[in-house]
Amino acid sequence: MKIYCSRCGTSETVSRSVDGVKSKTKKGWRTYGGVIYCPECVKSWKERNSKELNTAEETNTWIYERLLDIK
Image (cartoon, rainbow, N blue to C red; front, side):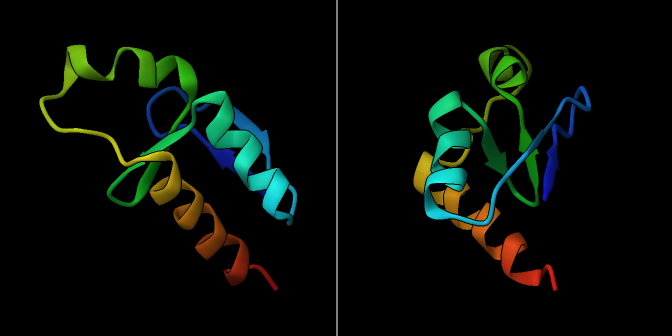
């Protein structure tokens, strides 16, 4: 599965494994609501928004849920 940054469109492939998902949050990918942001856009998040991004654990869950939807 590919994930795409909601702001800049950067994409990365996520493998269907726990380590594959966790590798993305270790790199700095984060979610907010129903979208995901790349590490570069996460770095500038606070300059553009007053709300907090989801934690790594919440982002992992977000990615897992989408992986489960893939048939």
